[in-house]
Image (cartoon, rainbow, N blue to C red; front, side):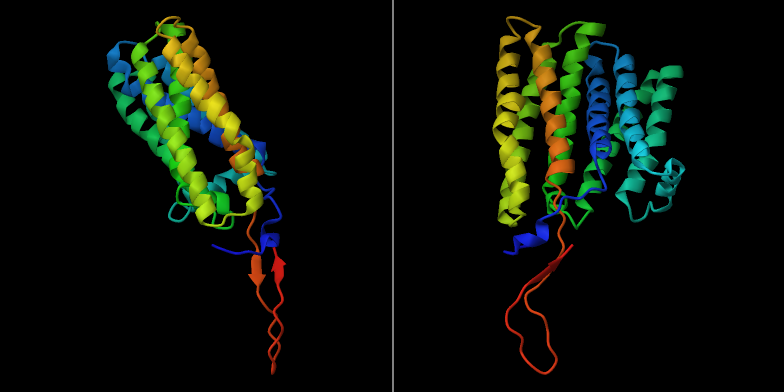
Length: 286
């Protein structure tokens, strides 16, 4: 919504802090790792331990949210609003995701494919949580979900590249996948920022993203891409590329959740006075 009165965006939300950001970071990289490790496992490695690591990261993210609640057992109330809340839908997807992962570990490897689909659904639910918050311009923009999804998938692939040598060996095909995902993430990032500018998002919000933009592009995309190219000569370079891809994604999501989340209040262009026309004045509130 276009509005020249920047005073209505002067306050950053305080309901969600680093613990909420931790949910999006852990849930994103964990679900991304589950999805890619299972989807690409036919290429010749055992995805079980990678899947379990992804589930542990998703669980860590959910635990961060649980810590944020003053009365933790009130967290059970999240299951009451499945028809209207994407936060509830994220919570509903989590138990089947963990159950499918446990069943895959205990009984049948073929159950890995439903686990991959549930991980993707969990990541999608996370992206819609932000979109549903209409009071925060940085979150409600329709291009925000694609940024969250591509970031989670990129982080998951980065962790896959980092972990594969520990259980099997370096896999050059994963480097090619990472290059594609890095390209998609940088496009989503630029597309999102252009959308915020077109929608006249709060200048202070845009400044937060402008401040991290050079480092995010260089450390999060260009440097990993160069390292992945060098990995064909020295394979260990791919692991550093994975670290940079994960760290830059987490940094961006922390900025999105905790730093750029300015609240939109309301604005009145003039105060109505019964029986006469009032002069143009502006009143804002949060």
